[in-house]
Length: 85
Image (cartoon, rainbow, N blue to C red; front, side):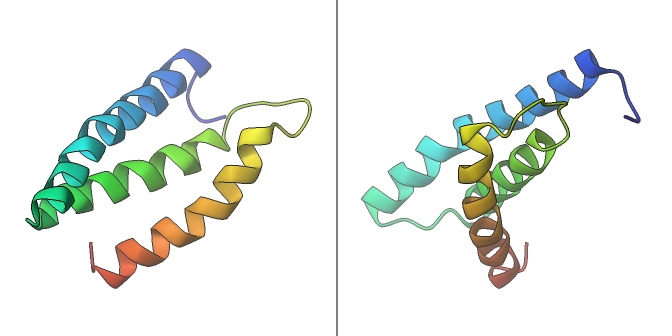
């Protein structure tokens, strides 16, 4: 691995936190009928990067969350590309 595990974990957690923070803002905008383009971009970017960095952790057996990431990462990436983020 190119960085030590605690630093890699910190990067992963910060990206996850950004996505968790941006998610309710995006949902609130959708419920109010307002489009927050930059917030959606931030949410999608943080989500894709969180999913991708999750695969960099050492593991002994395939974890159940890997199946979810394998399914959601292509969809999130396709939406981000569609929005030209």
